[in-house]
Image 1 (cartoon, protein in one colour):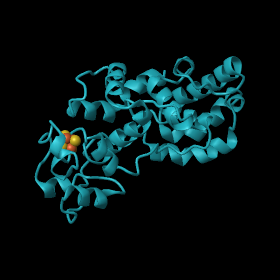
Image 2 (tube, helix red, strand yellow; image 1 turned 180 degrees about the vertical axis):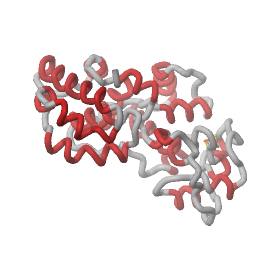
Image 3 (cartoon, protein in one colour; image 1 turned 90 degrees about the vertical axis):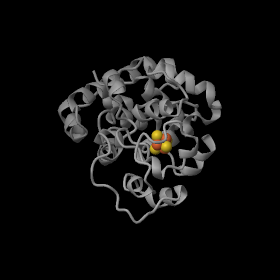
Image 4 (cartoon, helix red, strand yellow; image 1 turned 135 degrees about the horizontal axis):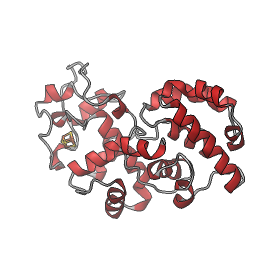
Length: 257
Ligand code: SF4
């Protein structure tokens, strides 16, 4: 399955835009309960205005809130960003730490966010258990656990450590594009032959093809041998938040006070 996943999603990557670890931390905080696309719309202006942890620590709250308003929960997120900046300045001389323990001790940073930062900004393997990841690995029988930390450990024991970050992206890509929460596109899925949950969604190739989403849709359908003449379904196949790797209600509850 790992090989099929990699072949299915060679374009898998962190969909948040950033150029420094601190920018990724900020973007990940903002991604709670919204889409990566929405976050990427606000971060160019935000990153131009605030460049360092110290800039966030001394930010004018009203101005900061206005810049991030469209990501939702902007008051809580502004509190997290100011708190994060303050803590990084006071405890780490303004430099974002790169261990899980130090990251999760910072305001606004939960375990999922910390793993996103470790894996994508520091090159330290991390498993990102968001809502997609948990759903898919349970469907595949990789674990029966619900608790994100237990899921992380269970999958960590199955997947080589060097692959933790990329496999996280591939699983999340599959969850966003094919294996949706309510109506997975089983009949147009490259993993169908090995999936114990095949049949959870429509198995008719044309019906399933209409459920496949995203910019690589045509390629995904070709790989699965599904017809690509069915227009993508307009009906939401999931909660809109499910478009976003950062949109995990569990994490949001942790990260946005
Ligand atoms: S066969 Fe269905 S349940 Fe299994 S991974 Fe594919 S879309 Fe998901």
